[in-house]
Length: 335
Image 1 (cartoon, rainbow, N blue to C red):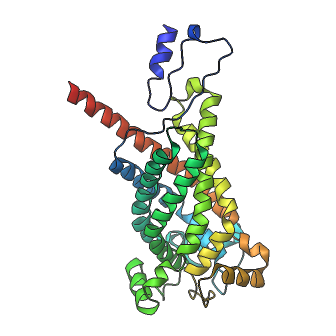
Image 2: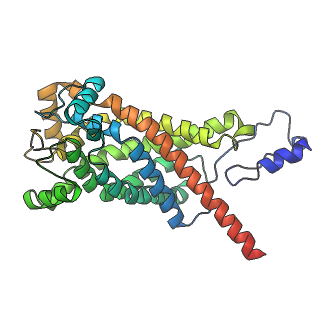
Image 3: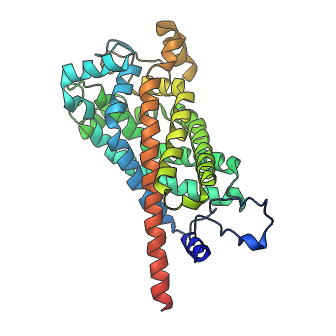
């Protein structure tokens, strides 16, 4: 009875069946791996990713606002690099709504961008893995392809979001007003002024993020394979948090450069003659020293660790929902 219950428990697409004890040597240690393909349609990956992205960014938006203020140099209201002081300054100058300024732009950009992000990742992962679900190189490369595609969708709204976060009401009254003014005063290219920097930042970020996530998830499952399907949410959330935190710290300098390019000329922030990463870095180091390149790393890590936990657990839950939906549809069709 115990053997039958255990076998039934692991009839799940995420795990390989464990051989019967009598059929293997006593020192055999089964390898628990994740299926390289989850049997979902492309549009199902897009919907699951879109929901996950919206939930993640909406939940963590106040932390992102603090980070943006800390990274924007010049005569902006927030000059301190301290998280506590930055948060207090925002609350004193604008109150609680100040932490959510620009959330509309985030909502418009996060859904479509994450739909592209996860669907491209899943397609590339299947293609590059060669049938090996433990191929960390394939996960990293797939993450790079995913971020190049999704950043093309998200960068314009991210720029609008960051300008609104700085709280200069005279400059922009809302998302569409900001879009109109940028088009009129700076041209379409302003929306993509930071695209190259964003891709250069997010390429290593997603490479580290996805490779770490897949490896951490596999490692956590192997620690306790007998309870892996029961603790699926905990596994995904923990692996996501580890992946998000490690990738966030590594790529903070490029995130500072990206923020500088997106917020130039707003609220007293520096305006650069070109979008050259080298020039922006030189300006930051001259003005604030090398420590200026790490401004906002604490809120960035505090953002990405729980954000990745929320995003991955939501995304995996969405995939599970569609897997069960597809299974029930197939069974009803056969019947």
